[in-house]
Image (cartoon, rainbow, N blue to C red):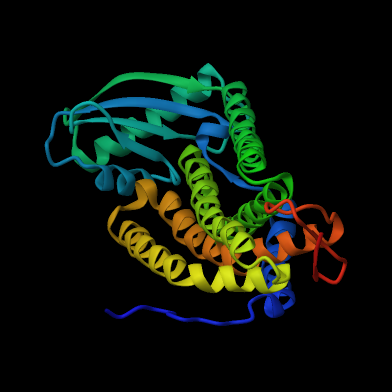
Length: 321
């Protein structure tokens, strides 16, 4: 049976400096652009008007509604089906600074006029229309940030108890790298940040952590098997041993996310873009970022490893005690 990267023996840690430079060159300009331009927040975060629509004409579909609103000068509307196939939720916002009852009615009238022009009178009915105020958007932003922070905290605590705090710190830092590179990617692509995109970010955290845990698990096993090897050799060996699994898992996941990106349509395109890039950056970090960070942490704060019989010198050499 064909095995990809079978018997691999790459000196991955030797290339860690190049990997960090590549990550910095990609990430820092993107974050600066994000800071200057600001995120492209969706209506869920900024506020707008929500319109529930019941389509009486079976020809009315999500793409046709989006095209009709775009032609009428209402770009960026979020359109989803709910309940039956002929029921839609439209979230839209006109160029107005404040969300008030007047602007809500104005947006509702603009949506009705656009759909009437496109599909004809009597082809739909508006069930309800209401404002999504900026206060609600602010609460959603706060909860999204809290979800990311709690995810990082849970990762650190879990790995601390599963291994030790040095492993947990390295895993959290590697995951922070994934989130920052994804933020930079979102900035470059000017993707609209919605709750769906936040869900993609949380998924990336879990995916990247899974890859990192597999490598760290092998590190722990090899620390017990090769008692007289230094930590540098053990980390390299562990990365190479888990490389076939990492590449195959990432490759199959990437196929699924690319298919989602091509076939799923605009409704979840943001999620598909974030997931596709997240698989790439998560694989990169599990190979080139996580283990070098663990080596750096061990050199900075040397201590007993999982064998309880070894300390790490500043050069990375093993000293059996």
